[in-house]
Length: 468
Image (cartoon, rainbow, N blue to C red):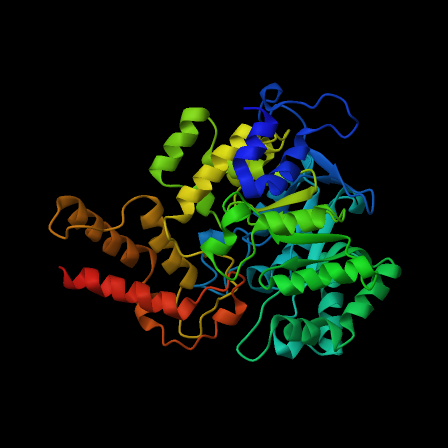
C-alpha cells in the first residue's frame, strides 16, 4: 500500500499517523534503514538526541518502579521486605554495558526505596555515563508546603548520591479530587507554594538539567501547560506521556477520563518538545493479548515476542526521546535491550495492523489498570492490582465464564476463575472486603472508579459461587 493511500484510508487519524511514520525518514536526508535491514538484538542500542540539551539518550529507558525483592517477596503483603540490591546492581551493570543510559525513579517508587537503591547501583559508575530522571512526587497535602516540597527534592539528591538531576518531572499532573479540580490541585502542589519557580531557579543553578512533567488526566491542564510554554511563562524541556498502540486512538474508550496519545504526542512534537513514553505495554496488558490476537502476530513474525510489537510502536515516532520499561528481572532487560538494538521502526502497513489489533483489544472491556500500585496500600488490606489482574487475564486469555451455565466450557471456566482468584488473591484481600471508602481513587492515574469496579467484581464472584 502506498503511503498516500494508507493515510487516506486512515481518515481522521491521518495527521497523527503521518507524524508517527516520519520516524522512518533519515534525519540527514539519506535513505532510511528499512525494518527488513534490521535484525533484533544484532546491533547497537538506538539513541535519540535531546534537541534542548544535546544529550544522547538511549531509546530504552530503565524504569526503576518494580524492583526485585529479596526472596521474591511481595511488598504489598510484606512491607518490611528488602529490595534485592545485588540483583539491581547486576541489572544496572548489564543495562549500562549494553547502551542503556536513562534511569527513571521517584521518591514514592517501591515504597520509597527506589531512589536509594538506584543511587547505590549507579554511583558505582562514572556520573557522566548515565542520566538520572526523578520526580517531585508531592501528592499528599502534607507535602504541599514550600518546606516539605523542597525537602523532598533535597532528599532525592541525597538518596541518588548526586548533586544534580538530569531530568526532573512534576509528577503525574492532571489529577483531581472530589474537592479540587486538576488546576486547583496543580496550583496547590506547584504554584501557590512557589515550588515551580524555585525549581526553575535550581535549573538555572545547574542542579536540574532538564525540567518537565508527567501527565495523566485532564486535557485542559495539559493544554494550559503547553500554552505557558508557547508564551514563555515556563519552558518544558521534555514531557512524559502514556503512549502505546491501544492508547493511540482509544485511550478515551478504555477510560473516558484519559486523552488519546496521538493528541498528546502531536501537540508536543509540533512544538519540538521531546517526549518520554511511559506504559508502552499498558501495564503489561499488551504483553498478554488473547490467543486470537497472538495468533495474528505470530502469523506475521513467528519468533517475535508479543510485547515487542508494542515496544517498537512506542519507539518509532521521531519525537520520542525515551521509552520507559519497568524491568524487574534480568530476562525482561535482556529482551528489551534486544528490541532496541537497534530499533525496527513500525512500517505504515504494520501501523494499520496494530490499529486493528487495538480496536479488537478495547472491545474486550477489561479494567484499565496498569498495576502502577499508586492505589496501594489499601487501608482495608485489599490487593487492588491483583484483583484487577486476575479479572483482566481471564478476559484476555478467553477463559471468562460466559454463555450457558450448563455448558461444559462454562463450568470449566467458572471453576478456573474461582480457583485462580483464591490462589492469586488471599480471601482477606479480595474485593468482598471493599467498603467503598474511595481513598484509593484520587491516587489512580487512570481515574478508575475502583470502588465501583470492586463491587462489580465481587458481585460477579458471588454469582459464580452461587451457581455451584
